[in-house]
Length: 441
Ligand SMILES: Cc1ncc(COP(=O)(O)O)c(C=O)c1O
Image (cartoon, rainbow, N blue to C red; front, side, top):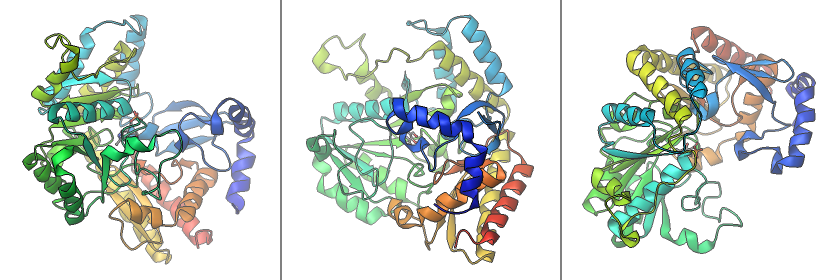
């Protein structure tokens, strides 16, 4: 990697560099979530408030990563911080049922009536694992269809065709046989997807799909794509599962299902629903969810085994999630604001790079966005894999080092309610400087 921005980054992050060398001795790769590493080393954060991250070397960054896109109200927003402070005084883990969990579930159900029943877990990875297990239990079939590049967390079942090259194994530790019951379909190509589904239809338990590919590159669905998959699944007696862990409460208060008029049998939520605390939720059709009922289904063989987790439905997460959803319900302007900022950013970035003759596509919708260099169109994960990630990394690192603006390199950005128009202006001014500097050519 070359350029003054790397030098600048190193000289501003001396303490982070030392911390990283300590971290690399205790964590493989120095991190606990693979995507948090970037070159030359990540800066270490010791505080965050509103739209800002603060690092151990006293640098401040306007944050567009926003806790894996979970923090729709920004870092430590007052209503959530107050609810957390009160809850922590009243206990952090009861290890038994609590009233706030019922309130949070009822709130979700009112906003998303298809959540006839739900189960809370601690991570999204568990929620998607539960969802596909329920689908297998309901249908008595084995095969799960997912999108190429689709990311549903680190559970073993869905850890297939996530990383490029998609057709190769995801690496040692996963038994090859585990992959034989997962089929992958090309996102946004309905004909090709249906052809794949047709070949496995007798054993197809479910289709699980993100309405907008998130981790794979911020790609909205083509018209009719999701509806076509849903139609096939329903006709075929398979479950249609929408993974709304990113999109739920981000694209709208009622999720992507309401935007695209979908009726998933099951769907998963996470991130925003936990108000900055760990959460995953599997929800949907009562008949399907009831297969996991340990009270009325006494025989072990008849019951779908989901629903563990020492920390599931813990009162701290419940309080933070409820405070967040209550705020969103009362303040509908959150969405008009963050969506407007998203649209300004997408248009502004595309215009700047076009003026500088740097070919790129800016994808996204509402409050999420990502720039892809050197491609004409971005409709699936392969287009993203074929884009120029080196240029994107340089762009993001230059924003970080020289302009105090943080995107997790190569990952999509998200606005929060704590951002405002001045942030977009700063982002665009910085983008213009970087584009004009020649480092991206
Ligand atoms: C669409 C989607 N599903 C599932 C997950 C997994 O959630 P978690 O990281 O909470 O396990 C993620 C995480 O980014 C996600 O983006």
